[in-house]
Length: 146
Image (cartoon, rainbow, N blue to C red; front, side):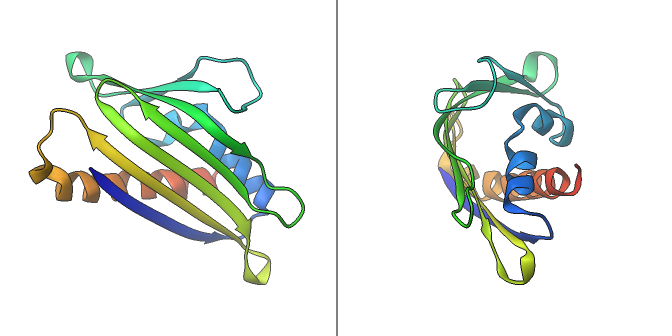
């Protein structure tokens, strides 16, 4: 099991950062070899389910997620979203938080616990480094792209 955290300070409003990070289908545009399908009707709410299908051909797997906390930012209150990962291969959770920061910037915190079934813990350092790199680039691209 791997736990990691990414933090960013971005020149966006909390509402705009929130929208960019929680528009689930956009994640498929920024994570390599991944397609995202939202299985429940919009708008996102507690209980929304989506699947990120990653890989190539027979080496593909589904990362099924359910939104268990959905608190969009309001006034000066932070926004917080929690996803529970319930796939056959990937388990764990992810939390996204956005809040007003100094200088009119928004502080973004992305925390994640990843557990890859059938993969011995000796691979945790590699999984952690890969996850931080992939999700860090994904967060950067999501936050840069309107």
